[in-house]
Amino acid sequence: MDKIVALCKRRGFIFQSSEIYGGLNGAWDYGPLGVELKRNLKDFWWKSMTQCRDDIVGFDGSILMNRAVWQASGHEATFSDPLVDCKTCKARFRADQLETSVCGLKPSKSPKSCGGELTEPRTFNLMFKTYVGSVEDDSAVTYLRPETAQAMFVQFKNVLEVARRKLPFGIAQIGKAFRNEINPRNFTFRSREFEQMEVEFFVKPDTGFEWLEKWKEDRLAWYEAIGIPRTKIHVLTVPDADRAFYSKGTYDLEYEFPFGVQELEGIAYRTDYDLKQHQEHSGKPLEYFDEETKSKYIPHVVEPSAGVDRTVLAVLCEAYAEETVKDEESGKEETRVVLRFAPRLAPVKAGVFPLLKNKPELVAKAKEVQKLLQPLLKVAYDEAGSIGKRYRRIDEEGTPFGITIDFETLEGVKEASSSATGASIAAGQKETVTLRHRDTMKQERIAIADLSAYLLAKTG
Ligand code: GAP
Image (cartoon, rainbow, N blue to C red; front, top):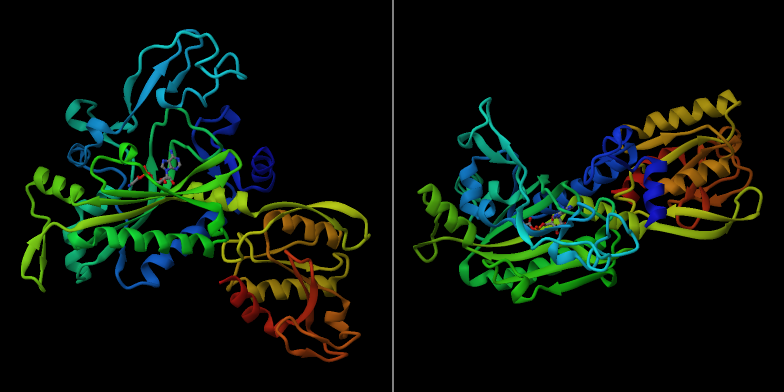
């Protein structure tokens, strides 16, 4: 994990928030590569939900909502963790995580074994309280949303009407959520500000369990499509005692992080609890009229709820590899660090390199190739250092392809070969480049005219 955290900083994936002021616990910033990775992940989720299926529509709710929402949902009264204070070191811990927490004064010990005096557990609401408007009194109180879900419940009727959908149908949303976690930890895994990708999937009451199973399979296939194999995901059937009281069944999809097997996503059968609560508290009907049965009822909900930041972290952990390889130029053995991202998630799809930076004709051609590709995919031009060093750099950044413009590009290839596309390249053919593959380090030629279509097909 330490190596991954160091790489994230070194290469600009993730930085500590407010670092120059000593940081802010539980908050993180995504740097130039991190933001691309995160965006690609969210775009793929969004596409999977709202473009590739016709039973889900998109939505973007506000973070601030009427306090009544949080009263109706039960968050104001019950969204809390048990907390204990240590009278000796003044640190706070989650009462249910004492065994795995670290004492503030004796980091090798847990708060249970360090000898410090702990208070009795008391509840601590995880929502960040704030005031709307200029007067800071009780009537102005609301909270930063602790989940994106509630806006989709309270707008259920509006969305249903405009989407002209019948059950089953879902609403999908990606957005920030905030929880004042007692112990943020494991890098971005447990943060105080994070993003969620949630679907509220509304179904007929007697089909809830069937949809719970379907969603479990669907989500496992999705993780596979972003490079996390099924074998690395543990499906936990959440036991009755640990499930939210309104849920009739929940699966947690857990990933083998370096710090243990931990939750990536929860898929919960939430019954009709949320819509019922909002109907009761708002006094507005949230029922659905079923044309087939000519009956009215409150739909049941199955909710796949995934964390963006946790998935990014899992993708980074899964992609990280160290291997001993022969340097492509000197032939010497060395350690190569490579991020084997699924190409669709890779922050940059290809590096574009002139073989030598002091040859204006190579530089001009490389820039021409860069301009050709830029409108279609994210590419990065680099002319600094030996070509071997530049390949190593893009390996560490997870870029699946390197494109090198060399003398054969300008003068014609010496030998005939088969191109990356399978077409043939004749001896003497100009306007071809070296295409280097990140994972195999294999190099082959490809015509510049074929580059766009080839890269789009491989990274889309
Ligand atoms: N609407 C349901 C809901 O919010 P949850 O299990 O509390 O359920 C869903 O959260 C997902 O959000 C989690 O599986 C996790 O990926 C992410 N998540 C929750 N708390 C988080 C935190 N403190 N830091 C990062 N991600 C978090």
